[in-house]
Amino acid sequence: MSPHICIIGAGVSGLRCADILLQNDCQVTIIEARNRIGGRITQSDELGFTLDIGANWVHSTGSNPVVELAKATDTPLHLWEHTTCLIDGAGKLVDNAKANATLDRVWSILEEASEYSKENTENIDPSKSLYDFFVDQAELLRKAGKINEYEHDLLLGMAEMWGAYVGDRAERQSLKYFFLEDCIEGDDLFIAANYSKIVDKIAEMAMSKATIQFQQKMAAIQPCRNPDRPGVTVITTDGREQGFDDVVVTTPLGWLKRNKHALNPLTPRLSQAIDSVSFGRLEKVFIQFSHAFWDASPLLPNGTLSSGSSSPEPSPSLPTSFMHWVNPSYTPETNPSRWRLETVSFAAFSEQLRRPVLLFYTFGDCSTHITSLIHGLVGQARHDVLNAFFHPYYSRLPNYDPKTCKAEAYLATEWCRDELAGYGSYSNFQIGISNAAEDVKCMRHGMPEHHIWLAGEHTAPFDGLGTVSGSYNSGEAVAQRILQIHKDSGSREPFNA
Image 1 (cartoon, helix red, strand yellow):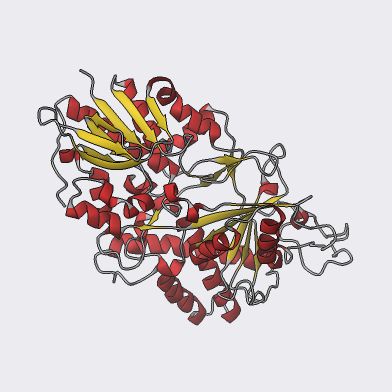
Image 2 (spheres, rainbow, N blue to C red; image 1 turned 180 degrees about the vertical axis):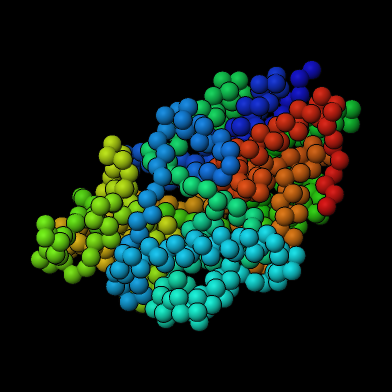
């Protein structure tokens, strides 16, 4: 008799797990609390075209299945040119060469930090942060005369860009386990259209052969009540009880943290691992304009600035890809904490996909603040609140004219208020964690002795934690282990650190 496997969640890891199991003649039931597949990958048409409001990057380290899926589905991938616009703490545009040099230094120090973390993890104090490492390196550069005081401050301000990768401030990023953030290696590609065709491709087998119960929330997993049949009973919030041979829980780590009581039994070691690994807060705010004014060159044919332009354009030959506002002192009413901000420009895409849109990334307390401001607001009221916050930043970009460069539309995410997303974005490793690698291994192992498995970006291989490819690979790996168990060649041994 074919094993019947339950998968909690129809995100990338759950869909890939179902794909492998179904290919090997298992019965699969997917319980999904939303009314759709994809999990934290989803789209919106609110700005007049379809864009991703969840995941939109492909962190291409090593062999990346998402790259192959993009090719198979004709999903365009964008490789960013490192053209940077940098606004300093006083609101002044930084010289283009200095801005790009600062960004290059940041990436160089990030690579040094990763190597240092990998080689010295046993001896690094758990309270030491990535930002502490930056402070030390910046001081060495300043003392060596390689940077002046202004460049020193720019460097530390730009160090905070790491927050947009992990969903919290660089001061919170563990240096001890920074090496687990291995996705900094290789090219970072951007889904220039959207993820929908990739998700549909992953879901083909599940959509045609699995039983999918939409808008059903898992309430508890318990040992099977039939002593003659080992397995689990999955109880949904409507009171329904269903028996399975095994269950794979692919809910976000943030959801697991708040609902550990749903896993019965739950080993003390797995409970500790779930508590120890952190969960980030990353939000996105899209702003649509009538035209990409920041890339309209103010230069006259003779190379001089046109009338009314007081600042050099970041790159006359290439569209600007990234824009950073570091340590802003000019927004004391709306941003007294001086959270740094950054954006990518959709005007840098290829001609067919180019849009006059800026995508702002916010993280940590800034994300929580913005979502609290806009929650429950719609229409013009929501627009006005967002514009009050973001206008001081986009208005400092090159070529801004208050008469012609008005924000036409906003689209802002609220993952921090999404229960099913775990009130956040994805896993990270914050200061204070003392055994992160083993914690991940423990979650990755799951509780096969109790017929309970975990999958998702928080259980991915170390080079894919927090990524879509990591989610995909985790679902595949769990499916393979379950198949081995049911072919009598695998082990149900508990985790042993």
